[in-house]
Length: 357
Image 1 (cartoon, one colour):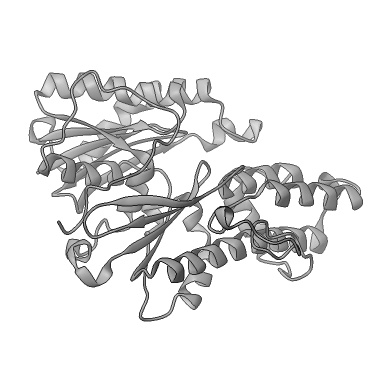
Image 2 (image 1 turned 180 degrees about the horizontal axis):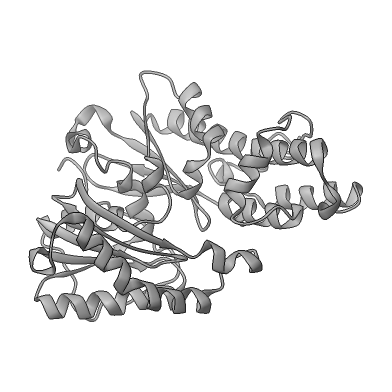
């Protein structure tokens, strides 16, 4: 079965063809980073206009790379949420028209769940059907989400921890803007931090109990990066302003800020893994491209725990994860009609389609 996936939830226009939910035949992505860089963040209306211009060429490229034609497509899958509504509607409208013209099923895909599934693309699909890998704990960390998701072998899923304010990727973006070092924040902070001392400045680790205040049990697995961002602002003001930081002082600031985020993500993930008695930990989402985060989890997630880290090409927004996940909905007979709509916010997560039973 060949599924054509479409992704336009934010600022990447992506189309991919995936065979049987696992074999990526092609993955074509058009990035809008340069268009949004001057604003230090994504402008939804601008993103939608860019998607309109890019989606046909991107699909043509994906078909060319795959060696397939539209007549080979068995189904169309599209991200219909969560994300930026103007951007989502471009992809969803295009997908509806394509599905109707081809006479194939349409599947709306939750972008958040697709990130989890993207970890297993281009790998042995039997990983998902081995009892010893469950329960799984997924750390989904991106510009819009920072969450811990518990996944059982029966397909039941639960968000056991989430951010109560900023997501980690959003914190990176805002920090980079404050330091006047560019956009997107995650990659430029990581690059700047390479020459810095991560122990130079002690930025806060919110909701970890390190502040001396007792941690409310309801926030044990939740995240908060707003205080960290404010701490960076005060740090910069004491030093004359973020735009004034340069040289080693800038490197040390970036490294220490990055360390605070990585440390919290590691601590919360390992604590939740122990508490829920999971067998596997998954790292996925755009911020999962961060090398210090990947290295820290590789160093601290020890046997018998298994660690699955999403390939970098499937961490950032892509359509392969959308097409791959759709395969399982199709197998279960869960396809959508043309009334499927877009949604901006993450709905309650209770099940995933990939599981043993």
